[in-house]
Each structure stands twice: as structure tokens, then as C-alpha cells.
Length: 291
Ligand SMILES: [Zn+2]
Image 1 (cartoon, protein in one colour):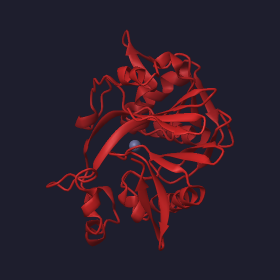
Image 2 (cartoon, rainbow, N blue to C red; image 1 turned 30 degrees about the horizontal axis):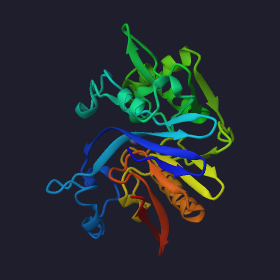
Image 3 (cartoon, rainbow, N blue to C red; image 1 turned 120 degrees about the vertical axis):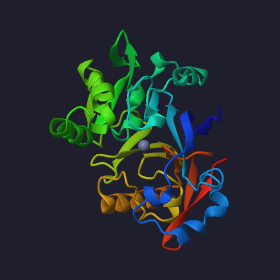
């Protein structure tokens, strides 16, 4: 397991699953084949499956350890959850053992932070115990952006239990009912090294988590981007974005922020090296992988 050191903090990625998913024509409503093909040489096979052309994606969490706290950023899909997507349905992965192998047993987690409340970012918030969903991390406070929570609470009222693939009911509400949830504004600072910033668009309350110790910085960006091609074409919002234009605007802003600050960009679904540094390139950006 790669342990990245940033000042007095460490960062580790723990993968739940990784593999080919959607074709880019389906993923990106603004897809352009010629523009995509211009980057194929470095994307195949790590980021694009040879032959099928499907986008390769990982579902992973980030463990951040500061001198004061152990923080998990995004909690993947979880085990034994009934989902429509066959690749996400009823998983049974040794995710908690993997966390433990990284020196992060469940009881050591102080904070769980979900960048947003989509199904693949909240799953391990809970686990099944005697037929009930209980918080997986018994000593953790779960920090939810108030605006994000309010949005899904409303959606749950109007759409019923199937909202977000059922994850609001089995992975978010049980945490709230157990008294473990803290609704936060984005000026909330859970640790001296961590700050939050709003990047709405993918969902109404999507946030990025920024880690900063002196001149060493990292940005945990959740799903502001799903695939590295979006670094090069920030206007390509995904079909899963709630507001295509607002998402594109936030993506460009986040990339500008990372280029400006020199932060290590740590998205939620990039496979391979998982993280990299953003550089300006003309009217757009490029990524230098942190291998
Ligand atoms: Zn996601």
C-alpha cells in the first residue's frame, strides 16, 4: 500500500472495487470522439479498457491521518446492499480488512466525511448487524454538508425509499438515527489541517476536502471529476451530474484552485496512480501523475 506523506499528515487509498464501466459516449453528454482519441495513447489500458473502449473506474476511500485525527473520505459501496447496478449489488468484499491492514481498524476512525451522498460514497457508513444497519465506525462522527443532506432528505420525501439506489435509507439515515451525524456548513474545520470548499453541480451540496500543512497540500475532490479525461476537457460533465453547466463551472474552478495551490488532486474514482498534480495547459489543464 502506498503511503503518501504530506507534511505531518499521511494519505492512503483503499480500494473497494475497480474495473471497466460505462462507455464514454454514455458517460459524457458532451463527448467528442476526436478529442477523446487525442488522449488514448496514455489512457489505454489504465484508464480506458482496450477493445471495448469502456472507461475504467475505481471505487475507493481515502484514509487521512493527521497528528490529531484519523479521517475517512468517502465510504464506497458497502457490503450486502441491494442495488440495481449488478456490479454494485450485494457486494461482499474484505474492505474492512483492507482498512485494518493499512493501520486503520474501524474503531480508530474519528471522522467520516462524505464529499456528497451518492450511493458509491456512503456505503460503508453502515454495516449489517443482526438484520439492522448500524454505523460501521463506532467512534466516528459522520460529517454531512447540510445543503447536501437537505437535498436528499427532500428527494427521499418525494421519490420514496429507492432514492439514490436505496442508499439514503440504508447508509445515511441509520447514522443520523444513531446520533452519529453532524450537519456542517462548509466553514466547519474538523481538524487544524482540514478545510472544506463548496463545488456544487455534481450534486447540490458537493464539497471538496482540502488538506494543508505548510506548503504541502492535497484536495480530495469526490466526483467533481470521474475520469482524468475531464482534466483536459473540464466542460465534460457526467450523465450523473445534477446540473451539467454548474458542474462544469465547479470543475474548472477546482482545477484552477489545484493548479494555483500545487495541491495533490485525489479524486474518488481515478484508477492507477489515483492522484496527480494539475498544471495549466492553454485554456485547459493536464495532470502529472504522482507515481
Ligand atoms: Zn462516485
